[in-house]
Length: 138
Image (cartoon, rainbow, N blue to C red; front, side, top):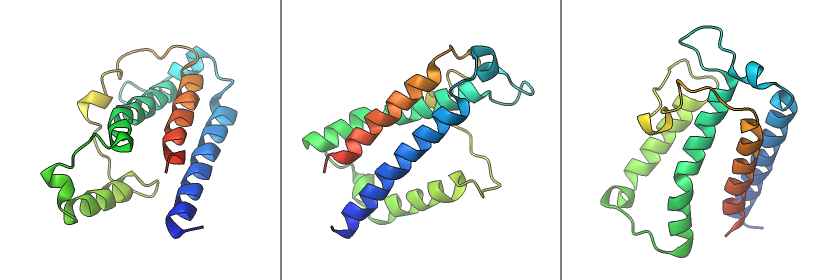
């Protein structure tokens, strides 16, 4: 197996583990528990899952275009330094060890004032499975 296939297999296994752990940890919570917030500035568990779903799903059309060979590279994507730099920044600032907070783009934050309906965790798990299916296409 090639190094890239090993990395892809590890990524798929990690996605499966994350989905299973999230379901085990939060799957039995009621809608009221999913929507509880310790204060007005904090996100509820449900809002966190909704944010993850919205962010994940925003990439699906782009990934489909790439798989079909229909997405041309933009000028910025063609510069080898920029994707590497921004990838490194995302990994650094989104890691659990990071002390810096980043504001989510507005496109991923529209739901912040909404109450999350019951069953959203199951939808998130389905979304993770859908994202996983993209990883298996190689």
